[in-house]
Image (cartoon, rainbow, N blue to C red):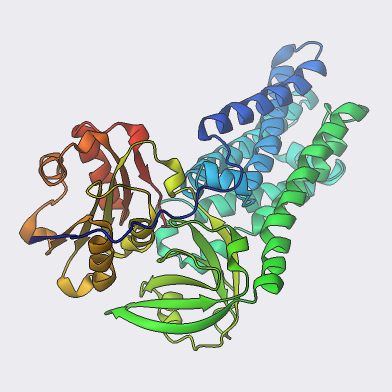
Length: 457
């Protein structure tokens, strides 16, 4: 079932705040990372006059794998350091995908480094690999610590695998990831004490120390000190909890000078509610309204233990917030016409954009998919915004088994005249988002006009 609500007279479209803060260009991230990898390979080249024999080739390949693994883990930590320029320019979901992909390389390179080095030294010493493994771990400085680090990385990689990750609670997966910090610390000493590239080379040591200390500084600053500083500055506290629909609540959070957070519609924070069962794990929730100098609002659907507990949070509860994060904002748009497509609780960031994204009367459309009319969140608010902005609002309600796919390329083209000329923002369940993006491309919308950000971690 599809119904349409079209706004009437314009009473002034809310233009929202202009994009603020430095933004890294997404296309520049991988070239910068690749340049660093070439510099790391240069360390091996400068310290390897020649390679000969099976043992030499094995050990050389092991050294290269170890150097790249050491460099890659520093890059992975930097990607997840919550650096504002990266968060605003690239977007958390793309950074998370790069982090996930890079994590597989780190684990693979670490295992390859260990196996190649053991094999190469075993060939050189004319011994078996088991005996050489024992000798390396017990006789060489910091090698045993590095072995423990490698096992920790393999363990983190296993719990992050696609077949296992969905079976874990978000909080469990999040805290297991902290073992990556321990693994990095354990492996660092081994790199400097036994790596041919660093022993007796102050320049190489300085380069490696600068890389790791720099990453450590941004991690401590943005992931630990900044949230504490914001807590003292803004003094966030729950001011109200409102039931929006079955299983969905909005939490109003008041504070001081919240405009200094520089939050934009479409962004999210990681929230810690300081109650007995919620304080220990930060969860990501988008802003569901345009941020005000004295209040922020998030909207949460009951998807598990923590989100269920949030419905029972009482006014007066203190809150810690990390952010804002994400590049799902109006600062990324290029065209004049705007289409927003929401599915389920994906309406949360799009409701804020629907209110604030710059668009002339008649150039803004929102398509909202839900299973039942009771699942339509913010219905009254959305219709009021549509009236005020003379925007078009389409509801598509009903189970997929009955109504089929409501967002085919043909259906989208019929609903939205001039579809290829629109900037399109999509947010919803991963399956729906992928299907909609494919339909948009088939309808002639270019990739650079399609903006989406996953909020499933």
